[in-house]
Image (cartoon, rainbow, N blue to C red):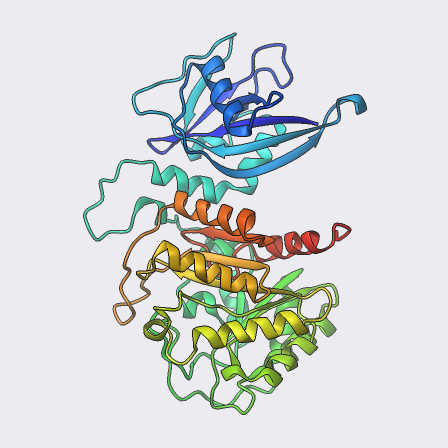
Length: 439
């Protein structure tokens, strides 16, 4: 096994890349600078040594793991190469000085796709592009007036014709999405890829949570054909993975659990190969309602904790922190084999780091294996204001803490992350963690 460390370094919105020396493996191709981990070294120590030797570039002490990729070497005797990507900082004003015929330069995100990259480095850029773009924006000088969104929260419009087609399809099926109702910042990107989170039981919620812009009031009776409408749209879109959420319906005897069950079963009948993730309300703590949803065997049972315990009463209108944990614990202990339990929280509402750590511990102790952390953004002036903007590097630290210290199988963390972001990828990672033989 050959371990290699690679540095992910940004400055002024650009990413540092270097070439390997001519004649070496991948010589001349651009890659993240770094080198081999020698016996007795940690990945951090190897990276500091390699960048000093190859680029005369010192690194500051704190480095965060971002990802590890593996690749079989050209010959069986060589074994496997593991490439460890670490987020590093270089002192301001210090430029790399390439050695041994190498080149090094800083590249803006628009240039990344034009570069001839080494295979694992190209894979890393593809799989983590949005996270890397957010880190690039974070490294840009902050010149925006006070009160404006930080640069890392600026998301370019995406969509065009594909986005319009998606909206038309949903309209034809008389369907609602949380993408629009909750003003999700990722909706253009998701619709461009013809994916959406379906929101059932209408578009009027019986609760008035102070973070959410979904309209609240007295809802209309459920549509008896809604399950079939959703299943038909999933089929027409050709989805392999569908996410279904709902407004809270405290006016219904079961809180809408039977409707959620029926949608899952309808999708399975219409599209047997499609996996379904559900994001449910707390059903007022009614475990019989939770059981109804679990009986449909969703791939993922999700219910969001939303925020830390201290802030829960002022952020959520009816739901309660401890009751949500009880729902998740019940789901984890009664879920059919293969069903993964998931939850999520928003940051930036005034929580402390200690409170976030405690909430993550509470979720893990309840049996949750997937968690999402995203930046709270005030949808309209009627909702709670943002207390703080959390930078991408802090979200990266939360991901490392959740996965490496608490044992979550996957923590999807970032400023623009929402509950269903990277949902399919996270599900399969959780399945592989539970069973190494999972595909």
